[in-house]
Image 1 (tube, rainbow, N blue to C red):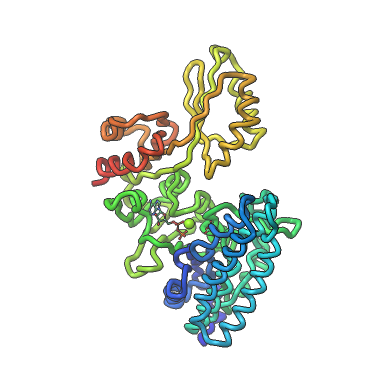
Image 2 (tube, rainbow, N blue to C red; image 1 turned 180 degrees about the horizontal axis):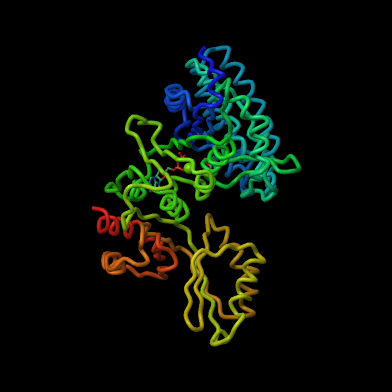
Length: 459
Ligand code: ADP
Ligand code: ASP
Ligand code: MG
């Protein structure tokens, strides 16, 4: 078995993150293990749950689920794990399967309670299991190809507040704990740990939000002063738009932190929106590539790049809600907007885009799986209605054109809107940022808009 040389302590450290499809089954895990083996700077591995497992766990934590469906889900999760472990040596398989059964028991004790409405704390405990399985299994897959892989519980270092479902990481504590508990191990072994999960001050499990493993990996890279972060996924890098929307999308070789961060913020699922914040803080270059086709290379994200084109990419964020507040009292009056935002802040609703006219203001909210909708239809709307007329529209998508100098380049509006002049556009934001121009369209038009715009701007 090859043990990493102790002298590598000061050698380059790459944090490698593998997403759900990359660790979906044994073959996929094996490909990732070979990626790790090929480059000895890969000394910390952050894994997501195997594809589909977190979605199963989300279903498990919902209220309207029968005990039978819960049992079926737990059986399906067991099958996903055992289909991987069966490819390992018999003794390893047996030991790992025992650990998996212990975890499944714990999961069942959290989940198998009929018609219970789970607290956000219980939901996080349930959602955390996917990464707990995959990290244990992946460490053994590494061992199977003679890489000295070892499991590490990220909760020892990833300390967060108690905002279950979107916990905020204590960066200072993370840095201290990494120096104390994690860094010393990296000189001897390839450490495999969990993305997405953390632990609050009460010792309870927290999660960082869906897709949060990218962010976990970036935070760990920052805390460990890593030389690189590699995000291994199911596409050969960052594309000019989501390749699932148009076959004409093409991979980008090099992109700046700022541009990639805009893409992530405006919905490009390839990176969790917060991923690049730690990387930018510590100037850690980020690579994005496909674990299926590592030989094809990928995208390098770094501080500055050779070219800064006007148009870099198009991002799409679905499930947007538009709220229009209207009141003649706004005309030449002061303090109206402060009251509106006061109400929104009280309910912890975060506004994305804003446009205003003399007596009305339009605001957009990200509304994944109806969460904002629930709030806006009840208390918040009633409170806003004390001040003004309120209209709420759902079923919208936000299209963002990302690039450089978009606030001052000539002809931008014409190129973009001429291409989609058959579409009803609900709101346009331009001028606040040099790096994006964005607008809302109906959900049903969204793919068509991206396709048409892409062929106008990139082909
Ligand atoms: P992982 O499980 O590895 O984290 P995700 O499914 O979260 O992977 O992200 C990868 C997916 O992101 C791709 O399969 C692709 O459909 C989608 N995606 C959205 N926008 C882009 C883009 N601009 N470039 C590449 N992929 C994108
Ligand atoms: N497993 C989590 C999710 O599916 C986190 C991640 O994959 O990044 O959202
Ligand atoms: Mg992801």
